[in-house]
Image 1: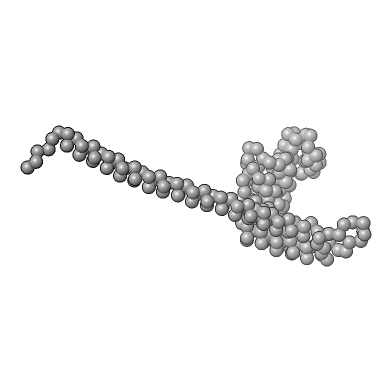
Image 2: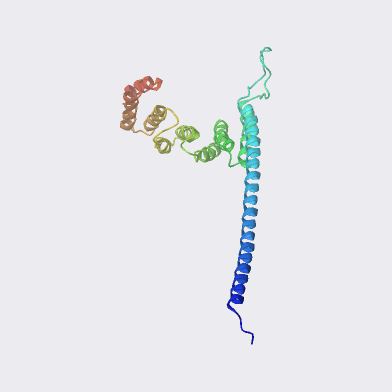
Length: 239
């Protein structure tokens, strides 16, 4: 049997370590390659999603703009020749709101997760209110309340919904909706208008004491607001 010298053993050890190092580099190299591929794939997805969202935003805003033109269109024939001709013209309010609500509903159905859809839900509710479809109006206004309290629609939708409830003899529901609107610490609207609507809702519900206290609160805390004068008149009328 050939006797292995210490030098030969050392050389074998070196060769083994070199082989292991090469193998390790190869493995790490593949891992790095996989990571690079994943990063590129994620970047490509993010890039594509960015442009997709931008296209969605643009398309939803364009359709919302078209719906708003119908919503704000004049009714009846244009009599002043010096006035610019409107894009849309309708023979009646019913015709106008019926046309506008179709576009608002299309914004909601096609672009449901966009800010344009949030506004479209609110305006669809308003259209159905004018069209005297209370169930549909309530449905869309309720949907439009589901936004952040940093969004002015959080308050507008609740005020519109409370108005709907008051006009359909449901003041208790109006009170609940308005109290919810008054919860945020930093509301995005002048809160005295919310308090005034709440006071009126209390009055409709027959809660005279709460109504009077709320009117008085407006007079005391919002003296410089135009609402204060109205509240002062009403507080004296509550018996």
